[in-house]
Length: 286
Ligand code: COA
Image 1 (cartoon, protein in one colour):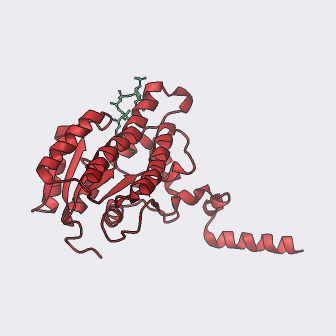
Image 2 (cartoon, rainbow, N blue to C red; image 1 turned 90 degrees about the horizontal axis):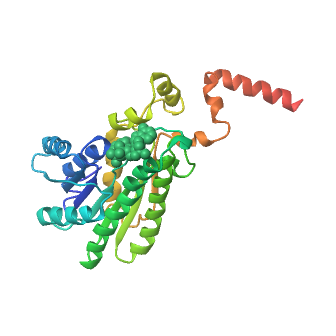
Image 3 (cartoon, rainbow, N blue to C red; image 1 turned 30 degrees about the vertical axis):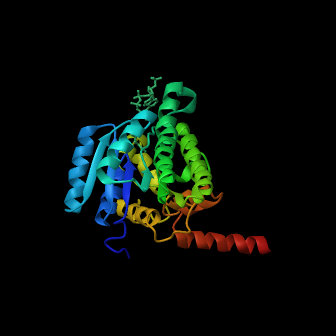
């Protein structure tokens, strides 16, 4: 579907691009010709990610910068440094996140703040700094925010993440409208169950929970990194210039468990359920 030079005119900064889904998206963008920059808090992680990306696209241009995106000044320095090496950043993926399971009544103010600062303030810092430089230079760009399917429903035991990601979704819509004037598109992708070591070690208590969780996914499987990376490449590219202010879920329909009677799908095999429905129909029509 994609030309190998789809992203050749892009310099894309991916926050948290040193591991997990961020790393796979970065490698895919590099395969499609983008100059990529990744940031994170751990320099060693960034170095090893850089090697992995280059092993997937030998002639790729990959820059790294260790920074904490919660720190506005650090982001300003980072963007200036990365642009001095790879040219104006005209693509940004706000991917870096923090999350863990905790009962909300036990959260310390600092725990709430840590997640909200990484996810919401970090996304603001990067969008504001990259966006204002584009506006100043009268250049167009594309911002992609990685949110989650529970922005619309809220979610138990991950309150800081639910609040912060809902904020990022509001930021997506706000900036899409405001910066549409400048030709800067702002979209979001809401991934559902894409397990990574980082996320699962914090969010999946044990094997039993994993089984219970998997039974909620209609296709019975998790998403694979390449599926998200291809969608991200499409959204950040110029293939659909009219798309802005959109949040696209990719979750195997897992989010639709919010439907009241979805639990019935798990009660029995489908043919038995159909018999049951038939019996209920006959009874109710008497
Ligand atoms: N349950 C409850 N509170 C927790 C916690 C947990 N599992 N993990 C951390 N906290 C609390 C800490 O106790 C601290 O609060 P306190 O000062 O009142 O004790 C506060 O959160 C900040 O923790 P700290 O480790 O100092 O912050 P940090 O900035 O280094 O780390 C986190 C931020 C907590 C979000 C950390 O998990 C992180 O760095 N995550 C990044 C990667 C990630 O989460 N990936 C998954 C994405 S889905």
